[in-house]
Length: 251
Image (cartoon, rainbow, N blue to C red; front, side, top):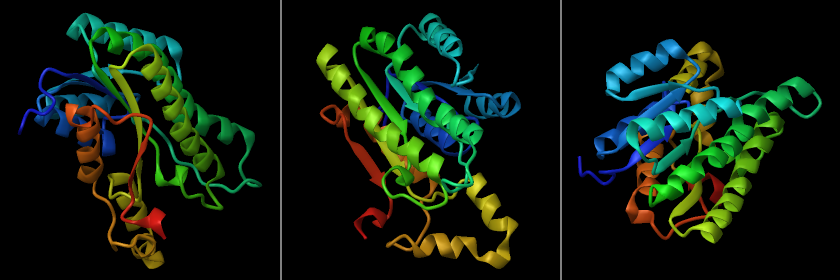
């Protein structure tokens, strides 16, 4: 523990498990006061007990939930310095097989939530004196796939929205920054379940074959990047994307 985030207050969405949980743990280790949110109440409670942090029941697609969450943090901590928009869902389907309901759902969770989170958090972050918004996109927002049209679209939009937010924040205050993180295939519990469910398909090896450094990313790899962007070490970095892809985008 080096206390790189000492004195900072963070909110991480979709943090009951997976990447969000790992980022929360890393930020707590670095001295931040962390609030986590999720719609999975049982997992949220379990993670809060494990990490000794506060949980917020937050449906990231609902404006009123965001308003309540930000007000809660303001009352409890008095400030907000770090916002990690991590909540998201994946859904397969090419353009012909994807129905409009699935398209809307994926964009609502993956994209609308980022819009709402930033919209409602910026004022408190500005008043808090400094701030770093970190939007978790995906390599799928950089490199497209034929069978994930809605997911590709939503994650690509998060990348460009982040740039627009960064420019807005730079214009209205030089204290709040906004960047996006784009992870490649990462060994989360969800990905591991997919790998274990069909050993005959050798999914892990197929994923690894696409990554030049020949291994999956680990949750800690993404958490380390988030800590960097949340810290004062990245104080001159805004409006950009951080690719954690093992060289995939270079091919």
